[in-house]
Image 1 (cartoon, one colour):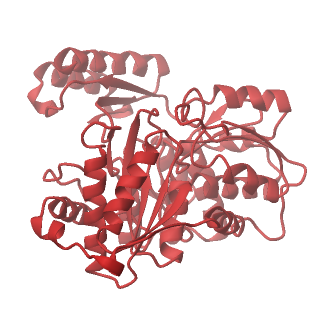
Image 2 (image 1 turned 180 degrees about the vertical axis):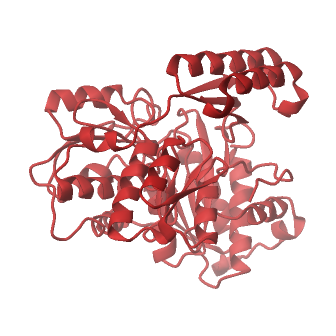
Image 3 (image 1 turned 30 degrees about the vertical axis):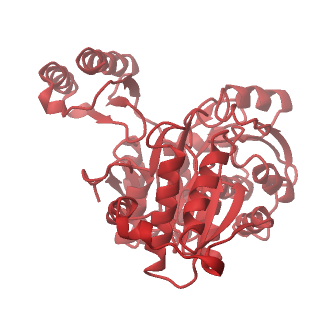
Length: 454
């Protein structure tokens, strides 16, 4: 399910860019809203589209523009306001809407924004459906199908959306357990979960200390959240907390900090969850699905437990696609997207946190001890800003650097070089037996990319 080269607006995770610059303009949002409504009408008769957003400043104009496009096609727009991406997927499915839309640039800075689209079953649109949407955006026939009088769509605010999602999340914490006696620090990244996250953990019985819960439209992801855990580390030490939970701007990913202040990334979280599911017999086909970015130690760990790992290209949508194709129920990414397909159709940072807390509560083992069940191989990841994307095979100096590093690593490591699907960056990953060595190797390749494309 590789991205189609025919797509002009959609990347690996919806449409994304600098707000008020093409393609993240009101004009594009309106055209896309009209196209989504037109596409949905061909397959359903419900004619309602759910729209959520994160708190970034540009969300107001894009929400209104998209909703206007929806209403112009005779479809109602159900506005959630600030709400996590997985909540939009959940509500789309449970409210039987035609489609769901999330206006967010996830972990990107506030000046960016994006639009993600979910089908009525709560799953992200397939590539071919995104290509179809792009054709509808420019199809004169779609623009001419405009209802009038009472047939024009309406917009409604869904006031109880947060409550519905909170009840949904709490249903996955074991009924015979609670979080009484636990102190939880949560960093909501001044993002979409700034209200629901503290409420969930508090209602489960934890003593909650929340940071990153004062969004002003410009501070989303700024020195806070899953990408910047320093504030969370300080909060854990200050409050002597049992665990720290860091979300990103749209709360579909999770990074955790243990009680000592050490960061626990998605690979370790997947290992803990997969081991628990293997123990309980809940991991379908004893298989974990992850991407090529995840640490090779996961393969070794799962194999030792009688399980196995399947890898996909980078992007949670591709993890989900492989899970659905193989009837598998758990997967994720090193970046913290954890997907429990029995419960949710997309990555959900809060759901993943609740599952982890249940393991900690049931076993009584501290996270700092539990995480050492997976010994990660040293990895070095370097991001390089690029002015253009050219095939790596057309860059002889870059290829030469990659070949030199691979020869030096031999069978004891690996290299992965790719372009980001959401930013103008190339990502260089080197994994091997020695931390200092892989840092040097990754920097060598990154320098050649910077010279060739910077």
